[in-house]
Figure 1: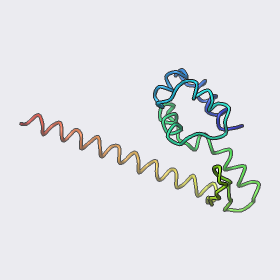
Figure 2: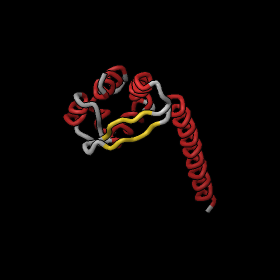
Figure 3: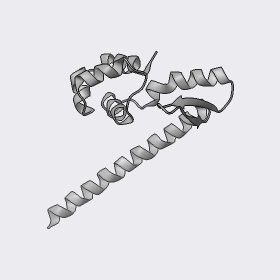
Figure 4: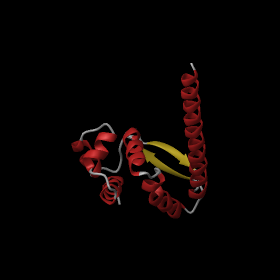
Length: 128
C-alpha cells in the first residue's frame, strides 16, 4: 500500500473531513487528494496530518520498514530517496522504533515544559 493510500485510509477512519485535514495542514483539498495518489509527500504536510489524526509518522511507515528489513535480512538497509536517488542508511526496525519512541517522549516533556513556563508567565503577569 502506498503512502497516499495509507493517509486516505487514516483520514477516512478519523472523525475529520478531508477539508478539515487540508486546512490544518495549510494546503488545498485538491493537494490532499493528489497526495492520496502518491507514495511520497512533503514532510511538513505529513507532520500536520499526523498531528491532526493523533498518530506518529511510524503509523504510515512501519510496514515499509518491516518489509525492507525482511527483504534484506540485515539490521541495516538502504532506501532510494528523492529525485537525485540519494541513499540513506537506517538502523534495524527495532532500533528505529526505539529511537522514535525516545524522541516522542522527549517531545512530550518539552511540550510540558513550555506549558509550565507559559503558566508561570501568566501567573507573574497577574501579580503586576
